[in-house]
Image (cartoon, rainbow, N blue to C red; front, side, top):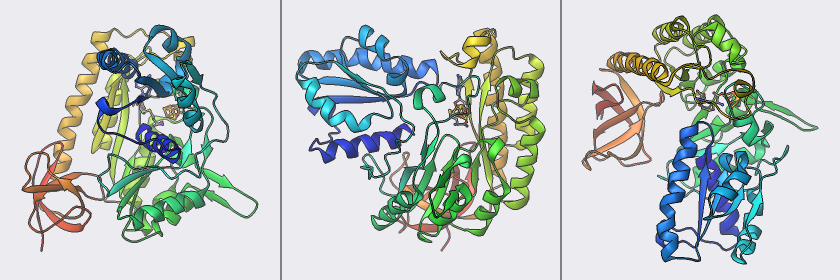
Length: 428
Ligand code: SAH
Ligand code: SF4
């Protein structure tokens, strides 16, 4: 999401005659886009700001700005505590950046953090920098108002709003024309995407269908789905279109009903498993990935065991696994206590990671011998004689280069694997 936002910021600034540089030593302005989801994300930014002081001693005119969720969350604190920060811009105020940069150059310190109920940056064509030219993100909505008890997003990114579908289609078409072959539609909960005008109403399944129809050459992915809103209509649309990738990211957060209720997730473990059954029934070759939090307030060993059990039942292909981090302003901070000792959180997280490692390896082993259509993305990090790409299930596959080139669709047969990667050979 931040990556997509940085591309919007680049578009806004390059239109006003600013230019991007990849060399930090050439920059007159340094814009740091930030995340506030866990405390360690914010600590990393603090560290980065500290490191930049050396550069600013040599280039004293350089101005540093903080963008995004951390800017939104602690604007005053940042201004007071980080003396080398000159400007602060929240996620809905990026259009003001060109004017701000002019004024900042005159020595003012500035902050714009008003959240909007309507800003979707509809009309802005993101400038894709640092891209492989093959895969791109398209932001389809902003904000979130689900208020999960642990989560800071509703406070930093404002109310949920969906973007005009026709501007999404225009962006997708433009990407295909430029040679891109895969787009990922982004939102905090894409299943609640809804656009209405006098003539029509578009929900997420229809939007997916519209984007899939842009070109058979374009693969379409999406993230993230809230389990409470994942409907069968979407699964049927996915089944009908070969170019909609068979991969669903369905954050479970916990396997315990008591925890899920306390987290305000609006589903039970059984509801979640029923959604998994629907995916397996309608999309038998779909991969499933998740997010999970270890050590949320009051979590018992029994709750933790329920999470491990959930992992064993679903057999996720990949998981993002986190230790609970108490965030200011959230329901948890106001009403609950961060009562699980850090060593217990760490141990529970390690148990989940170890189990997931085994499950991912077993899942990958089942792919040995299968042939997948792979979109080639680039040269393998390990050897320039090998390329890598991903299959529809979003698994990374590495293979000998032969005559293939990035941007092509090829068939690859899997011969070996690790827990993280499939290894294969091109099928002629
Ligand atoms: N909108 C997405 C999640 C975005 S945040 C969704 O609802 O699925 C990405 C992930 O960060 C969450 O799924 C959750 O697992 C994790 N997360 C959010 N807040 C957290 C916190 N306070 N501590 C630890 N992990 C957190
Ligand atoms: Fe946060 Fe929940 Fe919204 Fe996801 S759905 S962004 S976890 S509040």
